[in-house]
Image 1: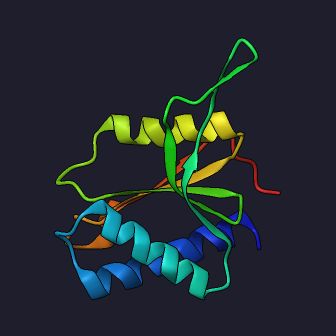
Image 2: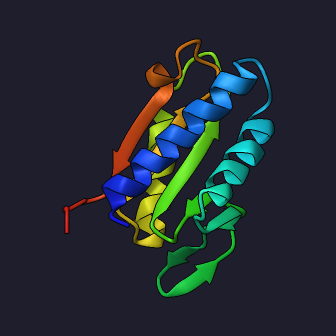
Image 3: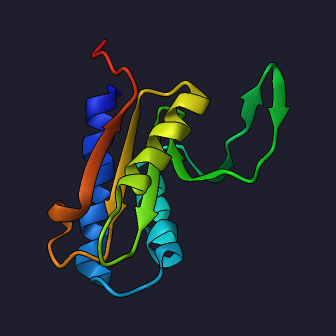
Length: 128
């Protein structure tokens, strides 16, 4: 599955979760339901994936975690807040750089219309 197909599947699953649950819950609820939906689609999903920091060839476990990693290719960060801040996108981009992945999805489930809360974050992405 291409990265574009994968991100489309992630968005579709997120829309389904949002349609059922609506806004107003905790991030953890959306994260768990999204992971479930993606697994039901036959996708490999890891939750709370540790993101190590490599500094001068030393691997440091600083407690950074990606909410979801889908098929080892896309990082998904789930939020449930009134407004996203630039640091939210910076967090996803940092996770992409530290893992060497190219594409991430930042999804804010607190929006009334979920499409307004979906953001694609790229790290030197090239369509293959």
